[in-house]
Image (cartoon, rainbow, N blue to C red; front, side, top):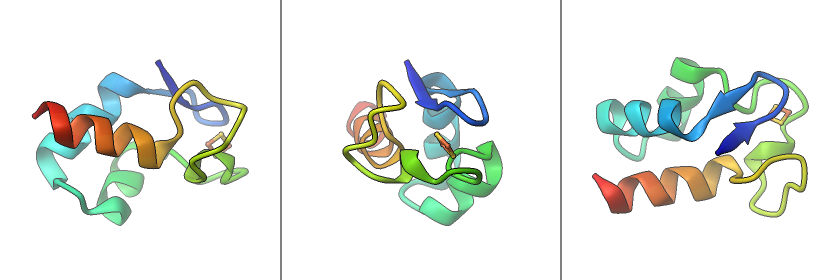
Length: 64
Ligand code: FES
């Protein structure tokens, strides 16, 4: 599932970052580069991606 279109970041990468950093959004962004270009994917309703970053983090936290 695509989480950040600009930097081609997918859900599996986010999940690994959440396993390491928990709900520390800044650390997750720094680790995987999601949300560092147009910033659309930082918003829940971003239509450029399948799973915007806040929702991807929420999903990963629920799964780990
Ligand atoms: S879609 Fe993530 S920074 Fe543009």
